[in-house]
Length: 399
Length: 139
Image 1: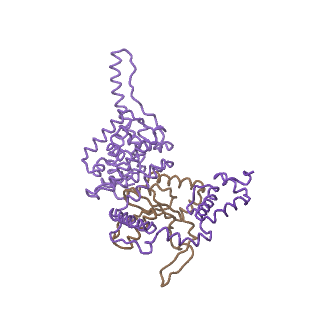
Image 2: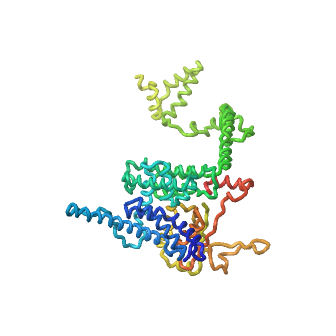
Image 3: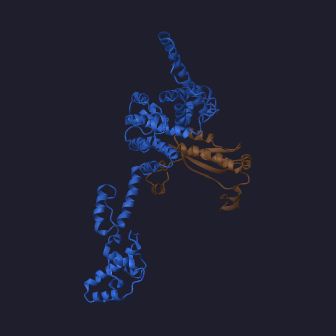
């Protein structure tokens, strides 16, 4: 089988095929390799070597039937070679050491677990591997720009050249950044695991901010040939969606995905929608403040300079609204608190009663009548809690 | 970044195969594949279609549209459902298509879905559609 688009194998078709598979699988391949080797730097290196080998071999023989298995097997072989080299060095050293000190233990080199299974990775662990990879790449021991580069490289599967083009920095700068980052991770002994629960929230925030930086770089890029620059905004969205799928219970991740949505729009569309929303809000605003609000929106460039609030919406005064609503209110069609209230049922009964009392105080003739009513009226059970609250003496309390 | 539609085309052979597969097993296989796409952050939309015999065909061959029951008699490959994915390249879309849990005999057509960015941005209908897409949270 040839590369995705068919035709005879060629350098170009191999590159495209490798790229396609690598984009889909890089995080899982690197994640599985880190778990396998327990060495982030080695895993990343052997994964890159496998990609380089694929470019050559696939160009000659066409893409294999199982490209993922091929990449993983090749990387694993490279990892084993590396272990052999190291343990050979260690053993030579061990021989010397034992000759000198008579029977010291040899070789501390780790040997990879023997994995004869055909599964490219452990399906039960792959999610955790990818997640752990994200957390390691965004680890706080790294400088912010190193986190960004390493995330794009190890999780996003971008080549150093692509990252360099995206950030308009020289390729060696990116390579050095990634190499330094990997050394830092090794030196700090950062474990390949999910952060413990007490650190989880903070570390997740770290991952999200890296994705946000990648996104903003992509969506605000104003220099450079956009066609040549990898779409960083897209990468950030893809990584955020991956994260959301892996951590479905973390609202912050969805928050980030949501944030990417509107921001991802071209500015003119965003502004058009903002102007529509502002116009609609102005139409229902209190008319005493409409002019000032419209002026601020215009000054901020969010509303067309020649925008006028339609005449029909320029009389939103409390009095006018109250008088317009009066018939409905008098007919008892409107609730006292149209948008809900925290007052208890008892308090809601009390409020109109107190209002009545207050009004009555304005008119000396009504007050005695009301008092008389209060003395003679036999309160029912529902009145009692209200009377207790305002400490009105009840007919019973007189006796 | 580009969107591609993976159009599932069933044939008599693949439909018969699918009918033989226990429903639970089919759900599991398709579910796993969908989950893969979700985890890779590429899935945008996916729908499967009901039995073609329950559909109707509106034929525009004549002066007026003619409505007939069921699928076209001569059609050998029936549109059974689709995926829309958001990927970096055509090759990546093809790579996903190759992984589809499709029954033998089935086919999948991979077609690019042009973005609204590719239409003239000063056209009033494009502006309206763009606003609608944004309001409804689409691409």
